[in-house]
Image (cartoon, rainbow, N blue to C red):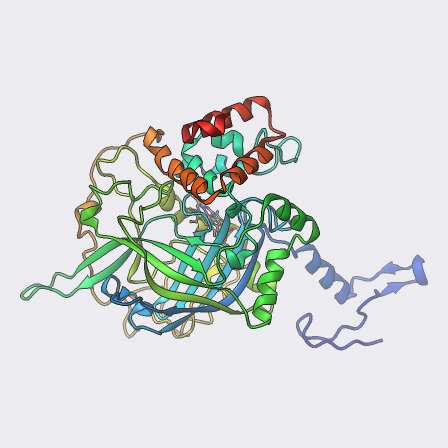
Length: 504
Ligand code: HEM
């Protein structure tokens, strides 16, 4: 009657794994509260679920490495003093999670959507998260629109059904800054062959930073920076499904992308990406042809070419999906010295963008709700043991284990005899004019101008040149076929800003 399993329930053996202790015979008996196994295992199964991510709920994860691989006559270390980028061929371990945006945890992988690509690089200076997309742009440029942007793609709050009248097109047609992103989502790039075959883009603008040594006779340490966008090119090539193939696959195998990721790694043929950067000097921003902080825009390659500086390769899969993939939490606010967020500066541009700044709050908030205040101590999220700096004031709270902190350390700083936990010197990070702000509070709402359609038109011309324009129109039509007349008209009307042909 005894089944010994030392790994369960505080390591005590299970006495009655599949039955229960009861008084009385057979089915007429009543349970005993001393049936510890029954009480513990039932309590555990009723607590198994945690909230799924409000977006990007369906995802897959894998481990791998980032390797510095500079192209000829280029050295990324000229722009950043991020430790992990200082030497060619230096490798850094990483964890990656790939996802769809809209669907719930059980939804199909191959539906038309953007794909999320999140990377956690376990650097010596702590964790750096790159939380990126398959599309080069984002549909909104004001964080205040994010709740509506999410809800419009989710289920109708009355019926629980996802329907096109309350859906993506209804919202987007009233927020035409989204149309550049829709140009990508409604091409076959909206249904990649699997996660392994898609482009990856940072979308938001970040900064590479580098500390300049003090001038002779001065102690003033200055930080110089360059604005940067990243792009990763799949080593397996970009491969997409058409609408019919994607629909068939969604029915046949909703987990097809996840399966492909796992199987390709198991066979030693895991996916990889070549990592590239577009880099802009802050002094060139004012006269740049587009607002470089607008996530609905791309930076023209003809003006700012991509430079290759690294490679990402995935080589192993987590041994516990819930522990490592479901409990992973990424955050663009997880930065390391040498990489920083862009400030979305308030210059003389006609509108401001606050998407990245909204994100800096949103991900930590989501992680605290989903995983608790000590989410960063979960093994997949925590910095590696050899990472030097840490913050001793982040102590206690539910689920606190903190095996990474040296024992017997004060929970404040500076403290007598404690090791250094802060950067050795104060740095003047407000070095550039673009980082100086002043002004009053304004209630701001972004407006759409004709120039917002310039890049969508360019994308449309590229489809015509490649012969994929018909496919794009079919994909739009398929997604709108069940929508209300008004929504269809509104959407086609907005696409006519892109090109009259689409309106016909
Ligand atoms: C205002 C804009 C945005 C807000 C407020 C926002 C917020 C969120 C939230 C709350 C989550 C769930 C996090 C969690 O539960 O752990 C999430 C996930 C994610 N977001 Fe965003 N997001 C925004 C824009 C973007 C953009 C522009 C990108 C890409 C460039 C992006 C990429 C991702 C990815 C890849 C994930 C999944 C992370 C994972 O695998 O756990 N998001 N976002």
